[in-house]
Every structure is written in C-alpha cells, then in structure tokens.
Amino acid sequence: MRRDSVVGRVFGVIIFMIGITILISVALFTYKLFNLSVSSNITASTAASPSAVSQLGASVVTMFYRIGLLIVLAIVGSLIAARGLHLYFVAGNTSQAVPSPKGARNDADKFVTQESDGK
Image 1 (cartoon, rainbow, N blue to C red):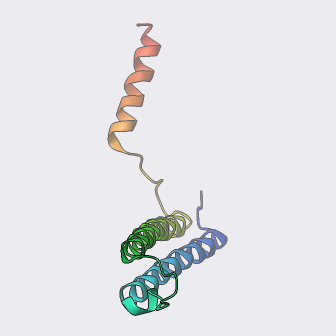
Image 2: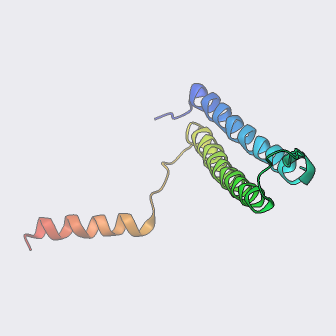
Image 3: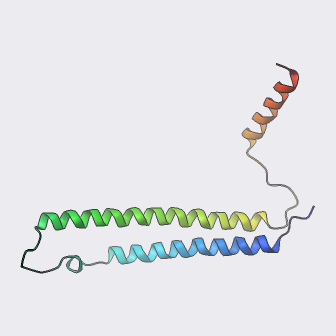
C-alpha cells in the first residue's frame, strides 16, 4: 500500500509555515515589549492625574497580561508547527506504519489475551 500523498505533504508544509509565522510574530512582540520606554506608557497630565501607585499597578497588570499572551502564543505556535511537521512526514512515502508507543501496545495485547482466556 502506497502512502505517499502530495496533498498531505503540501498541507503539512502550509501548517508548519503558519506555526513558524506565529513564532516569528511572538518574537517580534517580545522585542517590542521589552523595548518600550517607561515614558511612553505614562501620560504627563497634571490635572486630575491618577496616583503613581495606581499607574504602577496598571503597568504591572498590563505587563503580566502581555507576558501571558506571549507564552500562550509561543506554545500554540510550537504545537501548530509540530503538527505541520507530523502531517508532512506521515503523508510521505514510508515503507512501514508509524509505530505506537511500546507500553500501550503491550498492555492492549495482554488485555485482549485475558479476555479471550475467559478469566
């Protein structure tokens, strides 16, 4: 049985490139985040300006929110890129099937054997 699929390989490459694009965007967002100057986030209005403590609190919350988003985007980009590579190699011309984990296959064989013995 021939498992070579050009469409599968193309989808694998496209999905891999989407994952890499997400990772590059995470790197650019990180670069912008850590190159922000403090003065760009603080407005210098003297009339009814919030206290320094509330501005600091808002800045810290915003920073943690952005860092959390960067972590989530990095994980998602990595998973998408890995899935694209998996699709690419599975769709390729392989002479043998993709092996399942050793422990899971052996446990399943024992389970089937015990059921067939009537125990």
